[in-house]
Amino acid sequence: MWILMQASPAGMSDLELQVKLKQLELEQLKLEADELERQRAHELALRQLENTNANSALRAIASTPIFNVERAVKLIPSFSEADVESFFVTFERIASVNHWPSDKYAAILQARLTGKALRVFTELPLDQCQNYDTLKAALLTAYAVVPEVYRKRFRSVTKSPSETFCEYAFKLSTHFRRWMDSENAFADIDRIRELYQLEQFSDGLDSELRVWLIDQKPKTVMDAAKLADQYAAIRKGFQVSKTGQTSH
Image (cartoon, rainbow, N blue to C red):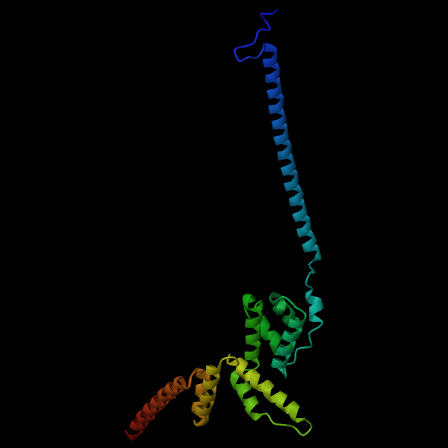
């Protein structure tokens, strides 16, 4: 018995060694169990986070109001063929105040179109009907609401006896704004300078050439001058040719 209990070379009996090994095994198992528990806790936390995010997304979707085109249409006044530009000003103001999505503008607008405007709408390609800016431009063109019309309205506006001077000034500024906006010039001082020079240049021309230049849509006074010179040269050549044929 004394021989069996004799210390091992490491100074430890066999029994003590077995106990020590068992303790090490238990500690290893505990470490593995702790690691497994940490992994499970981590996975559970991830699932809870995913569920929380999913629930938040669902709540956000549920809380987002669905845009109702029919309800929006009821807020828009009837389309006026007599004053198309005022209709668009009102339409865009109402849309802005109510924070309507811009991609719904065309759908709301088409529900109010009548007469010539409705015919223009039906004749446009589908992709253009769905684009508000394109549809608006087509309708303004159809009703001859072009920059030259805005310019003439601004230049011809007068004060009526029933108007106050403030009302007259507001009307004047409105026509000026529409003229400048139609030329994309309201916030561009260089463009405004060109418009005033173009206007003065055109006023000094005969009516036939002036109408022809308006159709050419020159952007600067020098562009208009070059076009006018070309027009004069072609007309002069035509007249010389006609005179020569008559003399024969």
